[in-house]
Length: 447
Ligand code: GDP
Ligand code: IMO
Ligand code: MG
Image 1 (cartoon, rainbow, N blue to C red):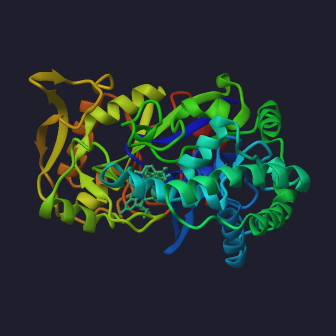
Image 2 (cartoon, helix red, strand yellow):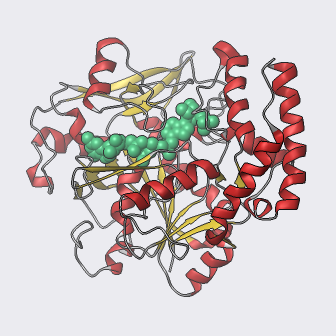
């Protein structure tokens, strides 16, 4: 059974959590393969809001297995807090349905501290990170000075390696940043205790996923962040520290590349970005504020106001092509209601040269000027629409024109944060993968 990759096709916060929760109904296993608690994935069920940072967005569906793979940088404090929080709200989180990779790297206190200090050090050149220790932890992984979850479970090994890591980080904190060092003994003890609490959940998740595939289970890989934040293919250096698209799955989950049968991108009907870096279709002033307020665009993880702009077809086409996505899902279409006519970016111009395809080879896309096409808006509230026929003509025309410019079919529309608020437009996959899982009922109708 080919697996499904669902990834962000913009700069993150596209509504992945909502869609993955919805699709979880039809799969057996949901897997995070990269990123860490920089992610904030929101699910809304009957008006109740759930925010997930490390635990996959399939956790609200009883009986589904949720895997945190080797490529995820795990902050045990956040993870245990999330487990406790879910349990307090009645979600069954047990070692049979939450699996943690023994070879995933650990984010420690020093990584979070240095994340913040690095940003201060960079001043106006800062990235605007989430402060969750992502860059420093992945840096240690690449430098081979990091600790993995399995190390946490071995107190002697953990003590030795953690002390060595802290000695280096404390020197940096004290000498470069002139801040007080972190308490080594206390941290060694604290993390050993956190490791003990995680022990029951830890295993060889790569082997478990490969076995799940052999048993014909349906596996959904949950991307965090978005393609434009990919460390190699995004707007470097204003990116995160992992491969965010389907390309990150084989190494991040410990599965062979051939397992990924389908990729579906998620993109908003407009665009947002949190933190610094190029954003060609960005709006400013009143127009940005109206869009931000209409879409409640404030960071799920940090509460920061998100930068807001128009849908950028050049950028989304690039993301979908890079990921090999045969279709995509447009979210937050309802947010455009009442905002007047809508511009969509159709081309870039840099130094007089015109680009219809994203110019990833340029060292900076800061200087990009955009070409836009203006589409008619609508005023009706569309959050209750569950079929294309219920949409105003102009909203339907917007979707069709954007799809045409992007050149990749839209398989689903999302019209409010609620779990079932979608309009299924076509079979999600060319071979009906999702339908196969539960007869002919449309997605969202099975519960
Ligand atoms: P993620 O990181 O991609 O999972 O997205 P976030 O959860 O960070 O941000 C998306 C926000 O939009 C959340 O508050 C969702 O509840 C909300 N949302 C998701 N889909 C829709 C939609 O179609 N319409 C509206 N109005 N809100 C949505
Ligand atoms: P989800 O999964 C939006 C951004 C940060 C910053 C850059 C680097 O919810 O879509 P990092 O902390 O990763 O070193 O920050 O990446 N960023 C996100 N933006 N959504 C996210 O996750 C993000 N995770 C990181 O704002 O610009
Ligand atoms: Mg988010």
